[in-house]
Image (tube, rainbow over all chains, first blue to last red; front, side, top):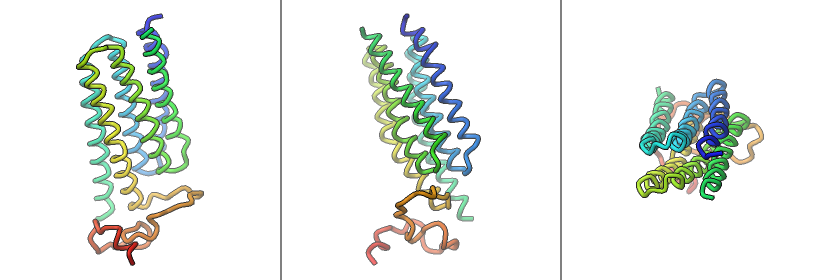
Length: 90
Length: 130
């Protein structure tokens, strides 16, 4: 069993289950902050998923996408917390 | 041999991310969910990235993977603190079995003083000094 097959048929379904669980919290979440936290966790999971895809397809350029997504994930959290704080003051 | 090691590391990383997802579904409180997100998911994604770096075995890919790990470790606590602080001041309730609430008597605390006329970034040390 090669490593590509193992990653494709064991790890990727596991991470798909992970994404579905996080998306349940994204739909249920009582407050807006819960949705922001679950979105951040979803983007962190997406970074790991992109790295698994880079190993599966043996393509090195996918790691650049993971770098950009890690940068954007932090900016998303900062921007959402800024706007939640602005929402209170008015 | 290396393939076995890569498989074990990536499996452990995926399991940590799965535990983080279970935690974010099962935890009763926003702040406990933030705690789960910060710790377990960062460790899991870091292990997946280290496995990918071991698979490619090149300097450029290893540098990128280490840069992502460093950036995640650097920014996950900052983002968690930002969103937790903001949602506390917005009035998101704590779990009813939470014991410690250090910000309850803070100057710009959430529930009592709705009209907050003082400057928002007042340092916390003034309140404790009184």
